[in-house]
Image (cartoon, rainbow, N blue to C red; front, top):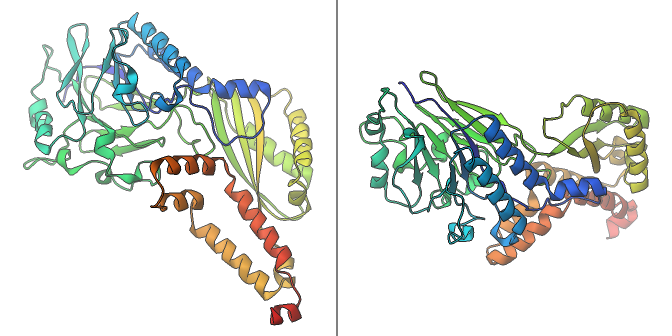
Length: 443
């Protein structure tokens, strides 16, 4: 199949001027970078559109957070869109949950290159380069199944231009179409069929999906599913805002040549990188050995083109005097100071460090502890290994809470260190339950 050559960038979850969450005290320089991170990321995105000479920019949801009421986000959008308008690059805006269409203030005179889509719109939209259609776009939301028939594969194959080339067809899932798929931010999907409503996967006489490129609506995680033919894709978020949003951050550059399949490439545009690093400490591990492990972990990673700050979380697991000492913030500060001195001369971004300590009960403690202590520690370890994100799960299953309280408690939970809670539980258990045999028998 011959396609009209085209190139576009797909971005989602920009969340302009939304602030990072769950961070400790940082330096003034890091604080400024964190506060401006999403705005800087958007500026890098706009420059990438210009550098890559794209035909259009596709924004699929949560470009900003309405509840923030941010003037800086609005100014950044206007400035960025105007730069694209000067190069005749259209912007296609699909509203999301945090930036519904009403929040975009359509009464304002946005640059003429900006096109807004309502979740209720299901007509095919032609994306033009000069007078040539390079791609078509259609929303998939709450419309009945028959609405999707207009883009069935056998029909859209007839949309050829004067060069006998067919434009790429793009479908966009909206929040309305993903409302029934609660896995959006929590679970990794095992198959494409779980992400796409049956109404537009197939028709009665064809096993082919309705579009070449299906934009998914799936939270902040990056997802790609192969279709037959085509691809379903969600770019995730270009700029993470906490340590749980550290994987595959970026925007997607999609390229279509006349005879080759759709090619997707991730572009990193974030100025701040969140890096959790797991390190296992033995009882005999020394401070010098730990510094070498941390140094190796840092130097093994290559800074991205736009990265100015690395937020490091050192997840230290094990036991011993060194790990015990790092429970003190002063000892942590001394270790980081010595590490920074060892890194002098290496071209790394600004570094900020936090520690997450996980204490493993030693064999000595297990042998000398009472039966009650051992039972308690086994229960804590079993719960920790079986239950993922227990605080979030507890809140999610609290059916008596209204949406406002759900949001408040979720915000608080995001700022808590679950591992620190488990560490405290282990230490308290070893201390409180280590009672004598006589006390145990008569308690």
